[in-house]
Amino acid sequence: MKIVIDTNIVFSALINASATIPEIIVSPFSDFRFYTSEYLLEELEKHKEKLQKASKLTEKEIHKATAKLFKYINTLSLEMIPQDIWTAAEDLTMDIDRNDTPFVALSIFLNAPLWTGDKILYNGLKNKGFDKVLSTHELIGM
Image: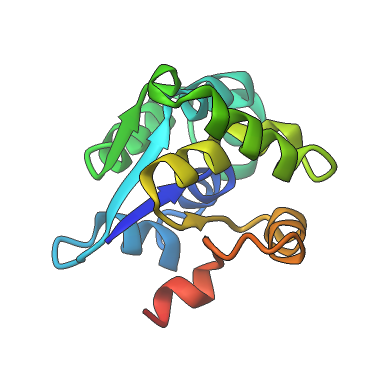
């Protein structure tokens, strides 16, 4: 099953490497195939100091942990997403968080659920009838 991962899921995995989220991502027995956009890599770079502080890891350790995670996450170019899907994703995220538009667009494009730990995004999308969004709890129950 395809799953789109947003930034806060990867942040959570990097902050607490012994938690459930990284175990789900790197499980060799999983039927999940994880996807994200290159935008997530930009977000990691943009917030690397915040990530270092929260994780208490050095920059080198964060790079190593990120490389390990991304062995299990396929990174796709946002350029492959048609404009009509971008427009639909923008409409969905406009009053929630525009920074999540790339992940919603990728979710629509791949016809795959979006895994997020962002409760505002999760609830906002659900309230708009977007049912392809999953919490960690829901993903574990699959």
